[in-house]
Image 1 (cartoon, rainbow, N blue to C red):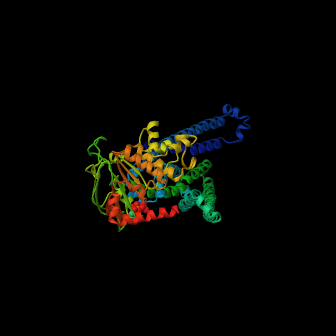
Image 2 (tube, rainbow, N blue to C red):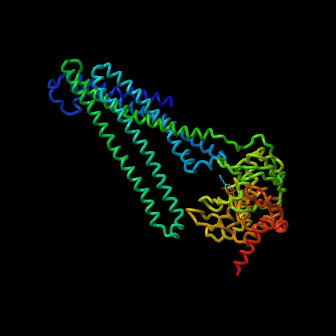
Image 3 (cartoon, protein in one colour):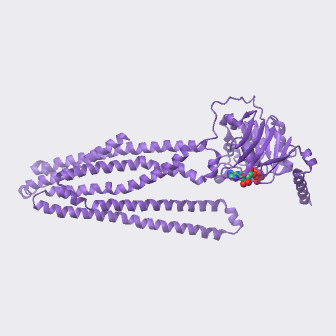
Length: 583
Ligand SMILES: Nc1ncnc2c1ncn2[C@@H]1O[C@H](COP(=O)(O)OP(=O)(O)OP(=O)(O)O)[C@@H](O)[C@H]1O
């Protein structure tokens, strides 16, 4: 960047020699007189036939040399300043992404994903503008203005003052207009995001729109947004189209002043005609740096605001992090037991406890289930095991060690988590299943798919495991998606598997097959299941009934039925529903 600043200063130094050479040529040729040498003939003759010709050729070569040097230095400036700003942008973006990946779930709950995305994209680009264009234009403005003003004052201080009269107006105008453009660009960008979001939402919910026959309604809403975008864009276009004419007008005023006042000075023999030409070029050269001051100040302000937002991300505390000095636990040593000791947890910003004073012991390799009404706190409770959140009170132990003492990556590597909302990436089924491990053989992937009872479905697809999922490929059924997600968790060969309502979209027969497999072949794995279906949980060693974040009943299926409490009522209700369905 320092080199870039040097190159730019040198470029501007050479730039001011262009008007100087032009003045010199004009003055020298004028002094020699015109008629004296008669007809010059061809341009080639000029070079050799007269003194005037020699002066012209010599000065032209100097001029070409200066312009070339200026061009080379400008190229070097961009290759240093702008290239380093791109490298800085790359580094910052990577740091922001690294940090975002480390931030706890809490951060993503309180920040919209769109905003998080903007941090890593637009905000980083704006900060780059500070290190690139803003710095470049600032150095350019000051060095160029410095050199030009010095030259102008050397020639004639009075004419300099006259020539500069319109420049303050120019910079104020440029500041105002680029402020307006910046503000409007932001508004337009936001409107464009709304428009894009609207379109994206419409197309991703197209089935719903068709089913409810709301095409016209959606179209109208889209048109409203689109119209608002058009109007804003037109306003910006109007202001932008005013910019260049006004700029030219102000330069024109400056040129007229120079010619008028300079003319008088030439008559008074204070300056030469060449000086007028020189001044006109100086004024033209000053215009862009002065006009760009406005842009620079505005862009600087924008960069600063973006930097503050990025800084907030970079300094956001990471309370859930990898513990470096944690003891290594080999896979064989791990038993998969889970203990909760008086655990309570509230979501940030919420007054209610999602998990309230929960205590239990789950033996390694056992099979437990959490049931309860929707919103009871089941998901919140199991999310505490892989430390998606940390509880405010109490302790959670895995294999007798507090989860806070575990190396986070080790803890999570051993937990196969199938969240309630299945998410599949827009890639092949193979990559979706292999997501949780660095490398997996075909056999391992097939085995995981077979255990999750989805292998047959996959083999039925034309491209089998290479079938693309999502937008660019096929749409899997809800049940197929869930089973693919289970295969993904099984491939990790976990010691603890958490199935958060992960069998809700599969039929009871497939559910039975998956659970039988888990029981028989993964007998060492601790299975923690959440379900609303008694059929899925009835064989569990222990069933916990959760209400309002607390365990209110616990025991095996039969014990709980004998208790005739909430679980028994839930069972009766489901039994009744089943019988009614069979009628
Ligand atoms: N990210 C969150 N931020 C704030 N509150 C939340 C968040 N997630 C869940 N909650 C609240 O915590 C409570 C427990 O929710 P949780 O998802 O754990 O219930 P659940 O028993 O798993 O329900 P379901 O059976 O419907 O999945 C609910 O009142 C819910 O509104």
